[in-house]
Length: 465
Image (cartoon, rainbow, N blue to C red; front, top):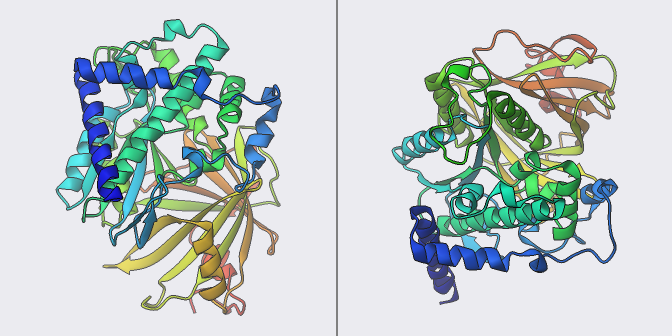
């Protein structure tokens, strides 16, 4: 009965959101009351004043000590057991994939939401589209003109972030009502606000609300899709006419687009879709990438390009994030030859995120399926299912953005080996490598540099054996 009541409440909130979007007066009145409840008084202020130098404390806040709010109750796949963000357990055999669609002004997000939704609904998925919280607020009276102090900007971003998470959580709960595999497409995500306010203001908001980056960025979404603004390499298509809250010039749009890309540095799966192939191909690349992530075969593929680096890299002269990674290969029944499964713990300071990856072959094509897991599942797998023929792989990773591509540097601690990884569309024939790295050579087709081979306790003379 309690579950039915909660689902009914979710449906009611959903109808309110619809009324807000449709301009219904009762919906607007409701929104005013919601926004009033999110005024500064609802955010617990720190007992002592903190400066922007407290950024490190955001990164190092322990999982146990973190304030129990929405950001620290991460969304999950529904595969096997899905513990939803409300704390309620929902058991289902169907997976839930949560993707962010972000990007600069006039990037094609609205069209992309419609295209992706229709494509996957026709293939048996239930698809929910989570509306952009900023558009809801701006279309119902909120204006940038009112945000003339840092404190007002902080309050607005806190309200925006809370609204965004509430909307996402509503649709996560709704996903438990379908027996089909489910996709949530989020029109922007929790980290987008970081691109629109000064770094100090964002950090103060994080500290005041008790948020941290691992929970806010890494644990809520399976992937982040960034659509590059038409103002970058497709200027003749850039327009302000199809969005009444869009005000940016071409130059401003480019700057916002770059800040949005930088805001998501550190997430384990960020994919940038530029304007190098035309808009229709851009949409097809997005659909193909999404298809791969949900286990469907596609015509267009993404590939990892790998390079051997000269020695360990401890820092880079661009914005970056650092992580400690532990990778454990598991022994599972039912996997064919050359198919495997591993779990990964990714730590930043005292906070960790966990992921389980299964690699299978389907009609000669390698298919990777990934899902976020909890720490206790990771610990159980570690103690009960770890492959005794393999070592634990330990890495130090640096993630950064350069020339529109996300790069990751893997340093294999036990091997004293450093590798540069970059995921690109297969049509890209040449990659502009960061000039500040000492690249020895490309090693994409050399399996002896893979974690799969390096984890073996007794390595064969040839990785193909």
